[in-house]
Image (cartoon, rainbow, N blue to C red):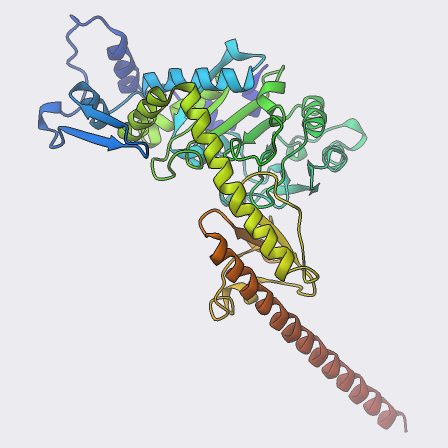
Length: 449
């Protein structure tokens, strides 16, 4: 594929950094080569010499000597080499990408950095963007400053509705004559445990959506941080990366939801030409991802092995599924009849539509604390946050069953008061309108007679 057509001028003009190229050369050069090029600090000056990380089962990971130096020194821009190898093996095992030989992996500071760099590589001001709504707010915050034309695609309990995507894409090509300004470059989607809905896009729909993207020449930005947090017994649907026979997918993964959020280690997988542009961007932005978190993740994966990692993920799913079920029980007990929702099949969130409330903003942000419950108003996930929105996002990831029960009970009371408040306002508005109409009628009759 010709990837240049997807890149904006800034991305096209990025050039390799000489210092980063020399650093990469130093990593692979023979030991007897004398390098006087690096501006790296002398490891003898580092104040930290060793450390121990203890896991829940008592296993100790020792960081000392050369391993600690690797933690504290600059690292290669693409990522800590042992970790890159582990991520490549993990990705190949989980997804079997059809175009693996033309693909590459880049470590990022959480998946958010990868998304930000990818979007800034593709976007131009005023560009048409195809997006599933509701949408992860962190991506909207990157896209919206470009003043895009949003093509909003509908979704339901099975994810993106292919017919809605097809109609949106067809609207960009009237009479099959596409206009450059109106043709989108990519589709952004969270296919597993979508934030905020918790929906998992079915495999049948993924295949249909992939065909549509091929037909309309779109890249797919597959943001999948909740890939391991699915709550059904059957294997997860094939990822877009697994389906990608044309080299259209940039996939974003993260250890934030699986290991530790604060380590900020994610990775991007995709066509080598696109990954190389992201690598150039990363080199100018942060030089390299913090070395210590990469070494820690790498050592953790080494100690666990594949079996240990799978056991950890299994326990993780059980823990979050227990919390999800507790929230569903509490919602069925307290919110039935005043809210609607789909059962989240993955992720950390329950997406609620509040019945009888036109807009949840003031209810949550002005009156929620007084009612002793705070959720995220749905506006945060909409392309136009100024429009009224009756939705709320509730997270079940950190609260225990007792707090979840209390929160849902408080939310029900808050909603009931809000329905009454908005009903009174509407009634007052109707009364004022009636009085104004009566005044106008009286004035007209007075003038007539």
